[in-house]
Length: 578
Image 1: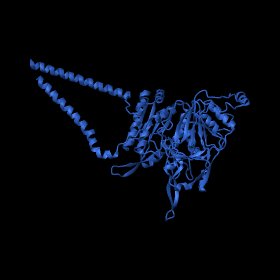
Image 2: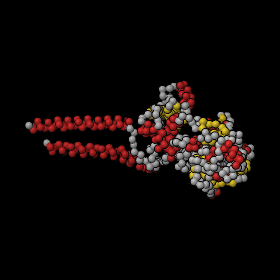
Image 3: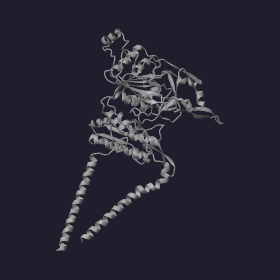
Image 4: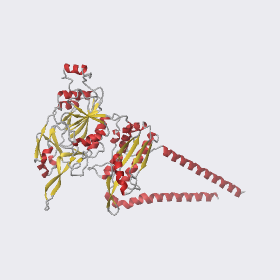
């Protein structure tokens, strides 16, 4: 009888165990199905790196067609780059939480299974799509260095269009660890911006103003090419045109070389009063840089652009001075000749070419690499009502102003710079002003002019803006110009002949224009911090084995301890029942 009860009890326990296993298996299957459909996570980072911005969420909610992403990073890479590659998939999975899983992605190795002869055409095909390879130096465990061609890009396809997104940031100022961290923090903005560009029915319209000696040749090649890829770009003659059409979302005034007359200022003023936005790139000081090729020194003088009163009315004053900064570009200079007769070249600090490392958290410049300036003038902000001023670029702690007229001499390269000589820190060089502006002509416009504007142009004079608008003022007319190699032609803006340095001038230009033209701008996603949390190299050497044991052996020991305790108490429990 006892044996029968025992057998019946064991069968009941076995049945219950089977039921439990089936229930657990069903729960696991449901969890996996749910996990594949719903992406959820907790962002425990202090900078909220993994939380999407509201602008990104709103844009993703509008996605109504499938989005496919080709990630050209299949294969083995150094740990930092592999982490960045995985972060792309993580970000796209996060996007899918708001697109109802309309985004799919694939890792691609463009050279997989290809012979050397087949690789050439592939390079060309990828370049036509905007995917450009870079050489990566890889150091192995035995400290030998090799090079590998990688394509740190994602090609996003949506609504029959394609946009190439560079995943890994470049630049000459920040180190590799910083660049990888910043690259990860910018993934949301870059990927979301690519989708947003393809969903717009037409790109914004912008105008490049001419008529006052503005550069319009090889030195603007990179600027105009970059803008034309994102905007409908046109040129507009400020002198001959009767007015500036409000159809232009923004206009660019880039390095005018002659004085702007009052009737032309009225056109600019009324464009702003109707909500227009302007990017000002001004050189108030004439510095004939080309002359330094033939003479040791030149005289920098005020060229009187006749814009002081207008800009002052908008909240800024561009000073007729030059910023000298110890944080500057290293200019290759011939200092002598070797015994073999070859030129001996050394790098010397050229304080008239400041390198701006943005410290502002504003989305235009946040997480941006260094920006190269050339003969930059400082900017003052002045009180004008409720206009908001935001400094985007400023000099370093060790800088100073050089008032004009000022003699610029190459002989300055021969003398070391001393910190005690640079006691005017953080001089603004680029300022964003936004708000409701008032017309500079409100107290001096004639009745005849107002009648002409109303009856002839059918554009009545406005003495203030109806809604907030914005403009960006930069005290450097060369910041978006590119140099030209005599043999190969234009090089990218922010690069310099004879060096491998590459600065973020192009990114700065595109961010400025996006902020001015796109009312639903996704630049908000750029406000996230990129914090580099590096390990202490000394402690890694001293305490490496200890932390390996803690991270590997201790968890295993804890599991074994719990398993042993479970088996012990289980045997004891059933032994007592017997």
